[in-house]
Length: 225
Image (cartoon, rainbow, N blue to C red; front, side, top):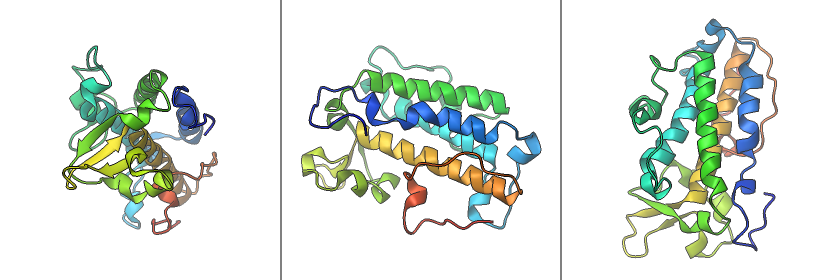
């Protein structure tokens, strides 16, 4: 992280450099792939049930789903972006972009760029302090609970990115910072899956992944073809 937490008024965007590099990483990794390679799946591994196209589409959909549907007017008080398309972008229940609208590699990458720009636009308006203060309520600690301790270790309870409600411990608070870390985890892990799908097809991997994300957990399935 390039912005110190000692200054809560510092801009939040530099805390999350992955949003500057991720699109380029994905494009480098899949640029030369044809449709057959993008759509290849296999019953041999659980991670190969989704194709490379599915993984990239899921990441774009994830960003629209979380920051528009879950955060709503809290992040967009002037009006919800993509209002007429959000159902198709969020991809409920498939958790991928609507394939009839955005099915080609070029269309999916365009929507990925738009989703990343949307999140960067959110963070450009936030500070180091505000991303720890804004939160959404959830009925469960969510998938992020698997990795939240990496970001919460040593922090007081009131500053943790994932914490139970002080009055109702069955309700959880996920801060904007925590949500961004969750998204980073999804982004890198699904690119890791794309790389494994390439290896299974005998294709060379092109980019080095940062050591963040769910794929770095000690109990994660890191089986290789």
